[in-house]
Length: 421
Image (cartoon, rainbow, N blue to C red; front, side):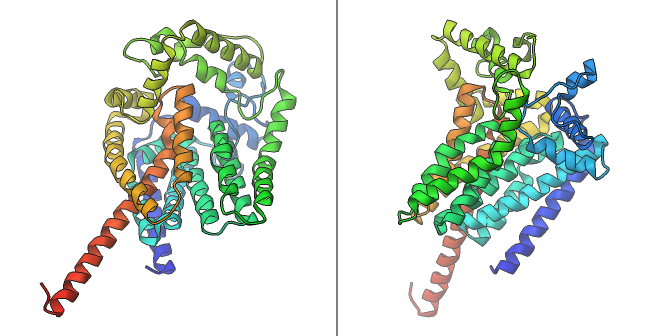
């Protein structure tokens, strides 16, 4: 497959995915609420000059309260949509669907970078129909952007693997920074991926690559971090959302019984003060609960990891997930497709290993997702970067199978021509 054929193929796949997502969001999407309402409303406020305030407080109390409940990139995306004149809920849903279509194309390019052009086409096809991706796009969740950025991280990482250099290290750093500005826990990719990659390859410029990847990660983060440090009562860096996520997963209903490893919004008490004060109070509350129930904590953490990888009570986890808005049909189909993708991804890891391709980028993503689940809860949403990794690995396995079958057929035909058995 030539580069031109690949570009045409992946463009058609991404276009079809985009159109399909737009049709679905116009036909079947639900009203925007919860986190999606936060992102879209905050984006609209940014477009009108109110930078990163809490849209819920503004609506309820008419107070412009500073907010960093989530990192900025997804809100900035909707600020751009609002800025060009599209501010309706339908416009935001269509914009998210378009972003999902772009993510499909980028995942295809990640597949090509990792395992070749045909694997890239297969990765694009899987991403186009993968239920956990398109249902996320319909919900207007930030995981749409998370998936796109995760694919960019893989592209940058394997570009560096192919040719280690200062420039390639800088691109890895920028990609990791973009991931952290989309989901705060993705900052773990810096120690788990960026630094180890920069160390690889030896050479006299190893120290320079380490410095460059560090600077390239830190500089894009600095404006957001400084902005947060100066505007809250207490020091905050990437997000003020950790306290709430810890508190709603640290109470009896999700530490014991059938909901173990999940979360419950009713666990969060009302706390006074600005977001940083509430974040600090809720973190203290959660850690106090951990200390008082430390005998149960290992079991809870194991349940969280089991849920995020859907090996512990997978049907129940899917039910919890669709009750959050995904819907029963997309939730169950997502579970089935995920379970079918995992063994292919494992085979793909062996294929890449046999070809001498390092698995560090995939392992870093998997470990990041696992650590996030251990600390917070086992939500399928947290797995979005790993879903991209699984899709690319599965594509590598399918590509290797097709290659082996083609080689076998060619060899058999050649043998018949020679009169061999």
